[in-house]
Amino acid sequence: MNRRTWRSVGAVVAGLLLITLLSVVTDTVLETTGIFPSLKEQREHGLTTPWMLLLALGYRLVYTAAGGYLTAVLAPRRPVRHAVALGVVGMVLGAAGAVVTGGWDLVPVWFSVAAVVTTPPLAWFGGWLRSRRLHGRAGNE
Image (cartoon, rainbow, N blue to C red; front, side, top):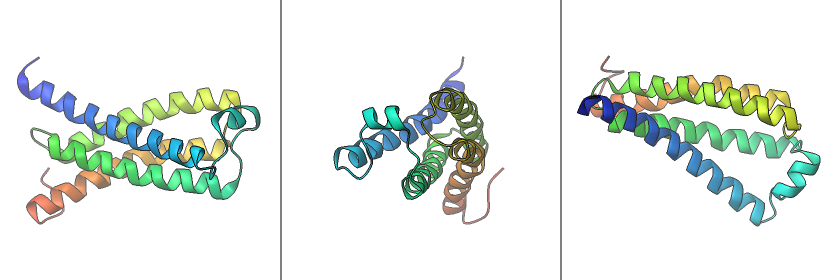
């Protein structure tokens, strides 16, 4: 692979890592402060309290857009397309995770579906925001 290809892959991986890191850190802070039940309690009883689920979904949505923005910043060219690629990869990984967590009955199905289907448009939105900020228009595709 050439240098530009490596930069493209790196941009998408960086976006994934940002989303994952922010989500895990936020989950951990909410669990250790007692706002969310511990991971052990979640495994035993699941996470079904609506406000907790909406909070978790809300910050994941923001983090996905931030991941799309970072991917667009790091992309060697066509930043919005790279952000969309992040969204597709995230959707595939999220669907795989939904199958696993659904099998453990950790969260309701609607939460998993919402997290999966919102990933591509939010990653695109983050890339679009970066492109708009960089070029002062809706995109540079």
